[in-house]
Image (cartoon, rainbow, N blue to C red; front, side):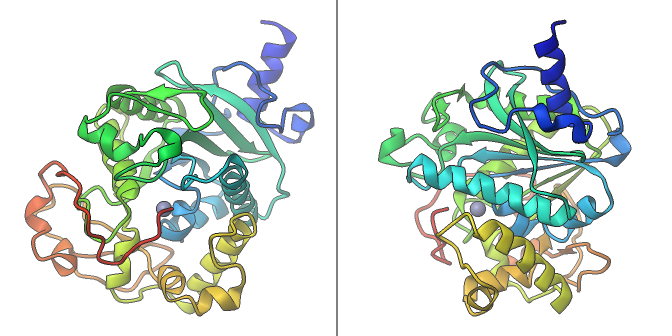
Length: 350
Ligand SMILES: [Zn+2]
């Protein structure tokens, strides 16, 4: 094992402040390396988020994500898409910077990260960034956003088409990787096996396209739900509603909403497409509705679901799928169906 290899492993594991010699530039790690979990990260204290876009975890999985960070748990968040919205690299790289700034804010740590090019279980390269001195790791697969139709500059490739089988492969927007349906699932299962979370969070895997949520939110959730079936270690899967929670009552305290907003503003400084100030976000109907809500979806195959109730101790409320869509409960054990065109809430495309 050579010196460069040892350094790469140390950088990837992010075991402490000795990481100042690690690469921080995106292309500095020029070859994919295995990434080890820090030794202090056990299954008992590890969680994983899998989302579509670089602000989904902030908006839809808080307070649970912030609570994990505050407790010092080891947390790996996987972003399936670049969140590019058909824009240039400067835009989607900015969103990655925003995610990093948000986690540094949550951790109360300097915004100092180590970067490694991680080798996935399917042999592809992905960018992994670790917040120095913590067990917080962000993994960016950089697949194109824009489901269900895709964008011209990425040959109309998107996760909806991959999941439906209408295309066989999807390529990352930086040209560094390609995935099939099977290899994307295997990649996520591989991350779970490698970082051994006992809690896995994703978006809404219980409802179908066209319920008002972004198709890529559902896609991330569908792939995660499928991937965790092959993750044999004991774990709990949690799904969270995205845009569609706007249809439900506000359920976060003023202090919880203010905390979510503060974290989001750290992100927003790097994303010109979103509200930029506390006042602007509070007066933006859509954004403030997301700050003041967080809803966990019912567990799959549940015979009964709890009614909506106020969040307690940093936990999201569970809500009956029946309240959101009368026909939803009967679908809990069925596979997702083909996408539909209409979006009741006219969500933005990122
Ligand atoms: Zn999103």
